[in-house]
Image 1: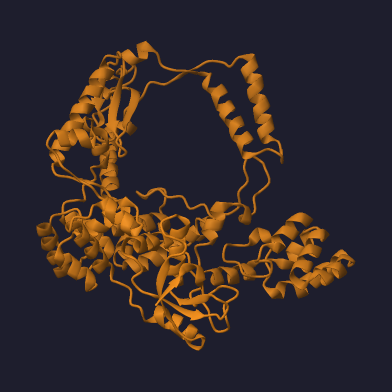
Image 2: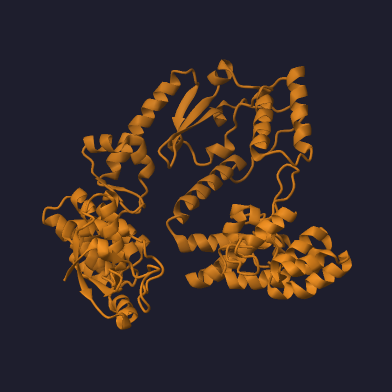
Length: 596
């Protein structure tokens, strides 16, 4: 049967007859744009199930989201407000059962089936824009769905069978069907169906994002190359990495020529220099000159203000003061001039972000003046082995090589990270980490294993076991106390970063730990009386709060310890995102802040 929209009301309407409800209480408004776009495109596929209210209206017991999407279309002028819609009328006694059955018995569509259906629409002639309009999706999202649906049928079947995850399928979208099938068979055989493994087997693990950003996609395509776009936020691939590298080198060489015209003694690309030049080659030092009396006086004035305990100072004022002080100090620096440029050079490097990095006033080892030995000092015998500068250069090469390869091996990176954090020989270890949380130094005293022993022990662990160790290491780095430039410390509840950190663990476990460690008696002894009175009123009611106001401080503390702490109350300043104790509705925070 058909019924006019004006005669329909949702199942959760306050005038709905007894027994009529909308069993869906969460997510009623989710995805209405997409649902409305679908209804506008193909119509209402499934009729609404309604119950007559006897007041001239019918109330929806199944299809409330569809009804809300229709109302959305009416409000947008895409559907007439007096239009008729198909409905099925049932009795109120079965309303709740009908709504529950419709939601419980429906089976969600597998993601592989969904994206394949989208791909079929594209093959039938529908453009990305048309599909986006029909289903209320952004064009960028439709492009991703079509890419997933366009993978090899073999990959789709493996996805349906649970042999590969959606993250792995995303990697397959960047390869031909032939390569997808070849790598999938190999990955299944080796039981290594992980995204990073598939990426490597497809030859997509080389990060060319920096080179491509520097050369430009248009220039690369004009030179005969082809860019394989990664729609899912990883890294694009190119058909000819050698061509891309040549184009980047040509641009870098042109940049070097431009720099040579500036009067440098030499200009070189960083890739052409020995490893470790950045650490081992000296640079021209800047000169210094005294500040003027005015600048010196102003600098001292700023420092005095920063050292003072100005509670009214804002973060913006403090940052501005630091910036002004830095600008004054910069006046005392004498930058190198043309003469220094003529006896030094600059190094051109290409960063991972595709931007040029220039290091100026670098002195090559051969340009460092030799120091003549004194006549009264006997000549030193020739040293055996390599010179220190060369050893340092080799260390730099090893450092850069390990840095470049660890990122492509997450498990190895995790082992190196944990070994560096737990080693007893932190100063000599090749991993430099700082764990400065509360108790971190004391915990480090118990670390007895050298770095190489830790690497051997950790390498034998599974990733899940390594993550447990990593969680323990992370605990050593926690330090929530913070004060800026002499100002008052900020409570955990006032700092978004601390709230984000406190929101990570299980709320119930964190709550139990906070209650165990919170010194409630010490808190009430130190807090002003007005704060304690407000807390009593917050937890035990206004009448108890008024009675507490007449108590002496000692009696009030004893009363609060005995009556408030057992309720699981925590002060506002210590509360975390999952706190559910007294005052968690927000009213307690307002009263406590007002009293303070």
